[in-house]
Image (cartoon, rainbow, N blue to C red; front, side, top):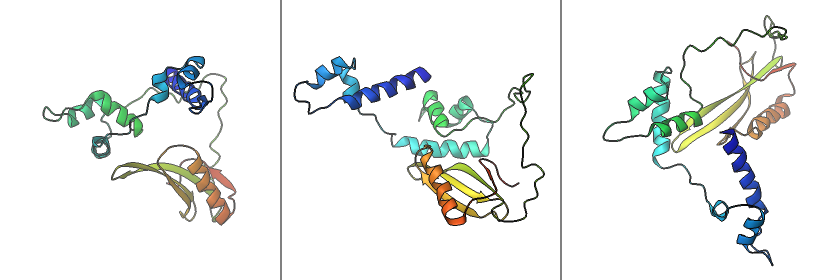
Length: 199
């Protein structure tokens, strides 16, 4: 998967180097010079099919009711003889939605010998005023035709939403914008915790 991602990025970089209006070199010649297949230059990625958003909503509903369901069990629940769904499709959509079955995993909490353990600095901290501790988190919201990602910045004492942004991608810019908006309106906290929140 990592190798494919690197290859796709490399192809995208080479495609951007091609100038369709070049005076002396045709597109075929430019592709040849860049060792780029012409089919890669002309390829237009397909968007999500009409059925996938509805399928994602169904997967989300089943997973919310039974978070122990993995790809195979989800496939058994969704796919029927009248409406077969490929297990690879379900696997791709669950990965896109960042859904993973809840199950007993290997104990990875044991640290290696000689590895330094950093303490959780907020344990036992008495939060008694606004702007003492902030945190941020990301979740996704089902929409009629897909999903949007929501990033919020919250004050632990007041539990007030200080800033938020919506995005249709998981790029970092909308998270940075939410935090910058909170800074502009409310100043800066004494402590900023990048994940988690009050119990």
